[in-house]
Length: 380
Image: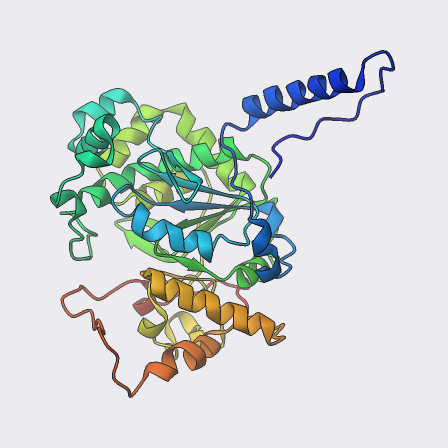
C-alpha cells in the first residue's frame, strides 16, 4: 500500500529530471512518515493468482491482535491464508518483532510507564521488553484452561486486556480513512466475501459496532475472539472519548478482567450501541455449533458465517482450502453454515480421527450456545 501519493505539480523546466525525482521522493517520504507511522505489509505478487476479486476489501483495515507467547505459533498461518489476499492489515502484539518479514507492533508502547511498572499484569511485558524472548519462562507459556472468566493463570491472557483501548487509537492513527475496521485474534478465521456482502448492507458513514454479543454486569459488548467490526465514525467516537481522560480508562481496565468488555463500555459511553451479530460471528469452531438452534429466532443453518474462533493452524488452513475450492468451482453464492457442515464437519462424522480433542474439562459456553441475531443485517 502507498501511504501517500504526491499531488501533480506544474513542471519546472530548469530542474534536471534526476533532481526533480529527488524532490518528489523527499516530499513523499517526509509526508508519509508524518501521517502514517505504521507501514502496511504488501500483498505478495505470487498471491494474486490465488486471490479472487473482492471489491470493497480495499476500504477495510484488518487488525490482528496477538501476543509474544503465541505469535510464532499462530501468526504464520494467517500470512499464508487469512491475510494473504488482504491489501491493508496491521498486526498488534505486546512485543515488537518480525515474523516472516512482517512487522508486529507493540500496541502497549503508549500505555503510561507508571501503569506498566505498578501493575503486576505487566510483569511478562517488562521482562520481555528488557531481555527479549529469552525472558519468557515455562509458566509464561502455560496455556491454562479456558473458563467462564477466561484464563486467569495465563500471564499473556492477563496482559491482553490492556491492548483493546490502545489498539483502537493506534489503528486509527495508522489509517484514518478506512470505511471499516475489522478486528480479529490469532485463532480467528474470516470469510472475506461474506464479510463484504454483509457490510455492503450497512452505511459506513454511520457509527457501527458489530459483534458477537456478550454481557458482563450491565455492559453488552462484542466478544473479541469472535471478531468485531467498527465503522470509521465509531472508531473516531471511541478515540475522542478515551483521549478526554486516558488515566480514567486505564483505571477501568485495571479493575476489570475482560478487555473486550472495557471496549464495550467505552463504545456505549461514546454513544455507539452494539449491533448483535450472532450467528454471523461466533465464538466456536465449525463442529461446535448447533446448526438448528432457534434461539433469538435465528437458525444458523441458512445463514452465512463471517468468522469462527478457537481454531488451530490446521483448522485455519482447512477453511482456507475449502474457500479456495469453493471459488475455483465457480460458486458465486455466499458460503452458508450448511455448506461448512457438508464439506468440513460431515466427512469427519462416524469415523476414527487420530488425536481427536473432545474438549472435556473445558467450561461450556460462548455465544454459539447463546444465540442472538442482527435485525435486518444478516445474510440469509
